[in-house]
Image (spheres, rainbow, N blue to C red):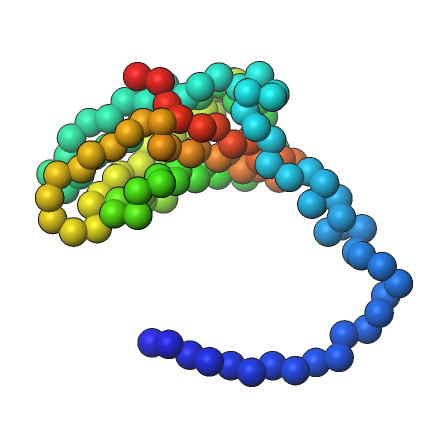
Length: 130
């Protein structure tokens, strides 16, 4: 249901950017290769509706409440939220990849982007090994 909402407010000028926002922006997302994270090893298993992805990757600890996000460049595919576990330096994430319509899935592993997000930083990994 589309909704439009008009808001108007005068915000106080606090004399500059908020330190917490400046710190968060300077952290940014770390490229996995730059911090020694390995290329994820991805196993794809056919399911009734699509593919099951299990990605295993060596990633340094990123802080509490780790979340793994999987993205695919192909807009015709949908990726479910992941279930992930950590064992030392290794993170294993599992997700379902489903087509937006009917038909087979064609997936180029190099089009996968996996981001491990924690309370201290985020690490982005491009592509998957077999």
